[in-house]
Length: 204
Ligand SMILES: Cc1cc2nc3c(=O)[nH]c(=O)nc-3n(C[C@H](O)[C@H](O)[C@H](O)COP(=O)(O)O)c2cc1C
Image (tube, rainbow, N blue to C red):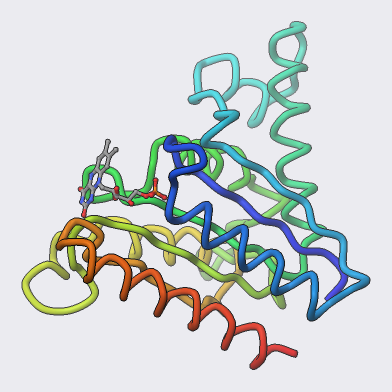
């Protein structure tokens, strides 16, 4: 394990459950892989701009204006961080049944034809093969089984996006029921922390 990318995406700063779990996981990973380079990208604190006609022209076409060159440089940087990573840890709070718009915008910038995926005669092919991902989810409700599962627009979407760019080895850790009272929240956060520790031990 040489390069680890940690993407956090909560708007809730230090109080964020998903960012706290990601921070603890980063410490676990650093201990298990002392030589690894850890790159942190916090799109919650420092949001990636939403796509505009400038960004789309910059990413899909040939950038010309200063704004287009700047937009292309950001996308190139984000793609490079991802391409270099052996392991990508994504911390995702659920907002309105999906991922945060800032994380979606990160995906909008890293799903790049010819760099992270391509279309072939047989359909799309992800180009980032051989990477591992850990997806840390935090949500107030309960969606991993039962009636709530049909409302989960977060986990299936993120899995689809990762798979589309070739990342299929995904370990999902969920902190759920965070609004079901302090005991349920504490138990869920503790279980998520243990699951992350187990993921490090398994990969070591
Ligand atoms: C704008 C917003 C929308 C939310 N929408 C949902 C939701 O649809 N379902 C849910 O279970 N929790 C929802 N929540 C609660 C968050 O998922 C929960 O507070 C979680 O802990 C956020 O992650 P974080 O602590 O890492 O910021 C929402 C929170 C915010 C701020």
